[in-house]
Image (cartoon, rainbow, N blue to C red; front, top):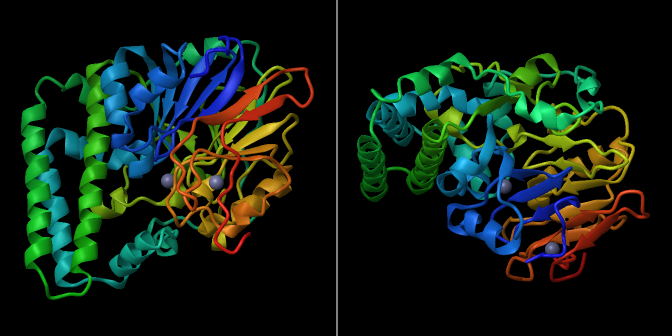
Length: 436
Ligand SMILES: [Zn+2]
Ligand SMILES: [Zn+2]
């Protein structure tokens, strides 16, 4: 519990859970970025540890990975009437209408795709399953998704980061939702009931588990089936998030990575307060790929948001699981071309995974970071590159290699008072057995 903080103090907290969730308070406005695993029960965690938060003005989901999105449905169930708006990945627009309108057709298609992949596992599915197992990025997907970007094509719109006169007004100015989502709201009475949905969802799980037991003519069967169970869980979370935003009348906003990658410009968010770095707001392009491709977690598509620092406001870069770049080996940085003015807290890209090591170079050429805030991850993380970032304090809710239980950690911002940032909680001692 941190009772000493008044509403007026800016801070960013990594919540003490096994997945990843950050709470930002900035100018009295509360933003939750990601919600951990379902079992993390984040609603209780917020109530237990942060006594004076009774409204979440913005709830952000960076991508569909279980350690980021798993807790969001339950959070919306218990906080639904106290959530101002929800920001979601545009990629989901290709999945939500199908799973919401006709879940049995949706899950049947997903199981059909599993069957053809079991009968004849392609190189692609084998590499996806392997990358997942080793917690690596999936380079092959990048070409499949149709985006190719050349160096020099990336420009974050710097206007978006300008200080508006009063962003609290901007927070109330929510752009109209995309038509496909308005249609779901309109049709909600005639659409599939929760009971029918639940039936379709459970039957899909049974079918995949049955195939896992019975289908034994490939060495990949087990991994592919496990992977498909993950896709079903992701679909379930996505569907329930949409359904809860509809039933609680919470405005949604959509952030599309592909739209950014196709023209190299980011846009949207709340000017001066919280803006996307690698997405455009809204066009929610319907992408014609197989369901499994649209559901596959693609770390390099994690949405990155930036709360630009001001003299009186805490600056935070929320990196999610992103390598902070695109192109070959993610070597083209998409961070803004100028350096930020004031101290910056960055959440650690992909829990410090070595596969995202290039992100630290991007951060350095951007102007550096004053505190790293690390959360979540498994014993595979963090890697050596993160452990060698010794220029600034590194906080870590749990040091997976040591086996600590998660501890509330974060940074309090004291404007106009050197050094401005006061880190507290656990300072990382994730040393690997032989030292860093
Ligand atoms: Zn993650
Ligand atoms: Zn650590």
